[in-house]
Image (cartoon, rainbow, N blue to C red; front, side, top):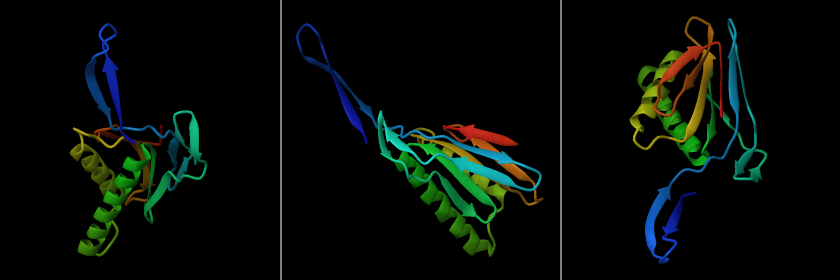
Length: 157
C-alpha cells in the first residue's frame, strides 16, 4: 500500500506539501541457526498492518534449492518480488550450468540483487541459510542495500 500525506498551514488552511510513502511494514521475525553440517530456519506466520492482523498463515521461509533457504520479513509485496527474482535467476543458472547454484553463490546473488535496488530498496529483512559446498552450515545476514555477513546464526525483523 502506498499513501500520500498532505500537510496544511495552520493559519491559512493552505496546502503546503505532500509526501509519498511507498512502504508498508508487515512485520515478522525470521531467524537461522547453523551447525557443523545443518541449518535450522524459522519464521513467524503473522502478517500485520499497523495494529491489525491480516493473516496468521503467511509464509516467510522459502526454499531456494535443496541446500538453501531464504527467510524474509518486512513488506509482503517486496518479499514476494524478491523471491520471484531470485527463483528466476536460479532457474536460469540451472539451465545454463546443469546443476543448482551453490549456497555461497546464492548469498552473493542476493547481495547483488539488493545492491542493484539500492536507490529504491526492497523493504525486506533477509536471512539466507544453507549448507555450502564443503558441507558446512551457514547463515548470512543482510542490510537493505546488500551488505552481507556470514555467521553461525542470524535473526531479522
